[in-house]
Each structure stands twice: as structure tokens, then as C-alpha cells.
Amino acid sequence: GEAIRAEQLGKTYAEGKLRTPVFDGLDLSVRIGETVAIIGASGAGKSTLLHLLGGLDTPTAGEVYVAGQKMSDLSDAARGQLRNRALGFVYQFHHLLPEFTALENVMLPVLVGGASVDEASQRGTALLEKVGLGHRLGHKPGELSGGERQRAAVARALVNRPACVLGDEPTGNLDDRTAGGVFELMLELNRDQKTSLVLVTHDRRLARQLDRVLELHEGKLREVPLNEV
Ligand code: ADP
Ligand code: ADP
Image (cartoon, rainbow, N blue to C red; front, side, top):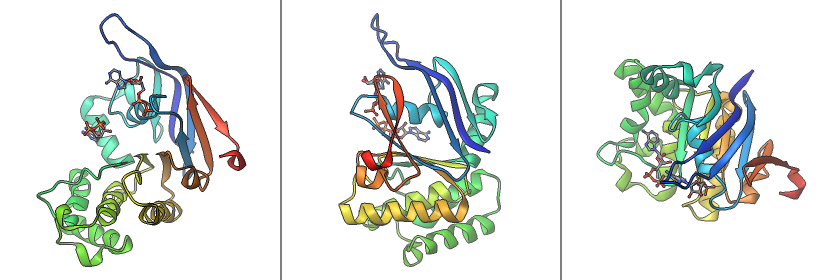
């Protein structure tokens, strides 16, 4: 089956009289468990594409399907629920809530999904242990290192066992070694949970460890053979 699919996707930002499409007629299909890197120059539209796939922004043409559900058919509330259940997000900056502990941050998506505090706590603790933060459950983001914060953000993205994780430069703010570790962790969770990964990255060494590399260029997605990445 498919984790996520874009059909004839188009996006044009309206900015006064100037209307240049970022892309138009873009197709993408990501199978369950598949890992895909999106590369491309700055301004090519990579973030725009991720926002559309994640339902954070609305396409001006085409459709996005998440776990088989057509996003445009859903109410805002239903789309929010689908995002919380079926998608995880990881950004360059962790976006953890500063007033909450690592465990509370990871529990939140589980609670939003309707589970009890006990269950959220159990699942959050188990996953934080898995990402090597078992000794940091009660720490707030400001008390964690950059790599630890990013691992907590990865745990938050994966705690609901989503069909797909969307990452916008998820290791872009980390030194090479820490970035490699966080990347490895995402691949491990991909193997364990069958969660698909769609990662925008500038780092070609990391990109070529994924199943497919797609380059966004002049509004088109082109598959780059892994030995050319
Ligand atoms: P990338 O992530 O590949 O750097 P973006 O998706 O951020 O590219 O941007 C693609 C193009 O869309 C750029 O020309 C950018 O200026 C434009 N753009 C992005 N977001 C907006 C916005 N909110 N309003 C208007 N134009 C935007
Ligand atoms: P930027 O200008 O780099 O996009 P922002 O701080 O505005 O920085 O947003 C950072 C990221 O968080 C963006 O990719 C944005 O789309 C995303 N974001 C904003 N609101 C939400 C939300 N409600 N849920 C998930 N991600 C969000």
C-alpha cells in the first residue's frame, strides 16, 4: 500500500500581481515502509512540497492522499486528526514545547489521539528509552543538548506509529557526527515500525542511504540514481 501520494500537485503563491508557480502537475507516491530523500537547490520548493504533503498548506491544484485518505475531502478537524495519527513531523529546529519535559512533549500526540495519561506515559517512556533518552525523561528542552533535543523530536514524531514521517532538514542543525546518529535512529525506527520517511536534506551522504533520491528542479521531481547522488 501507499503511505502518501500526491497527484498532479500544483502550488502558486499569490503575491500581488506576481504569480509564479512553484510547481505544477507533480506526482509522488511513497509506499509503506519506503524511505525517500528530496533534494534540490534553495528555493526549488522542497519545503512547500512537504507542507502540502503534511496538510499544513493547501495545494492550488491536485490532490494529496495520506494513508489512503484524500485530504481535500476532510474537514479541518478530521484533517488534524489524520495528521496526528498518520503523520509525524521533524524540523531543523526541534519545535519542542519549552515548558514541558521531554516525556511530556512525547506524550502529547498520544494524548491528542485520545489515549489515557498512563498509556501515553508508558509509550513515551518506552520510545525515549529506545532513542537513548531514558535518563532525560524529566528534562526540559533547554536542559538537553542539540542532539538530545532532536532525538526527542524524532520520538515525538514517531510515538503514534505514523504511516509517514515528513522531515524538513531534520539533521540540518547538528554537527556531522550527531546528524549521522539522528539519521541512523530514524532509519532504525523506519525498519522497526515500517514508518515511511520523506526527508528534505542537503546532505547527500545521508540522502544516498535512503531507498530513493528525488531532485526537485524547475517544478519537476526527477529520480537521481543512488550512485550519482
Ligand atoms: P525550498 O524549501 O526548496 O528552499 P520553498 O518551498 O521554501 O523552497 O520555496 C519555493 C518558492 O516559493 C520560493 O521562490 C519561495 O520564495 C516561494 N515561497 C515559499 N513560501 C512562500 C510564501 N509563504 N509566500 C510566497 N512565496 C513563497
Ligand atoms: P519557517 O519560516 O522556517 O518555516 P516557522 O517557525 O514559521 O519557520 O515554522 C517552522 C516549521 O513549523 C515550518 O515548517 C512550519 O510550517 C511548521 N509549522 C507551523 N505550524 C505548524 C503546525 N501547527 N503543526 C506542525 N508544523 C507547523
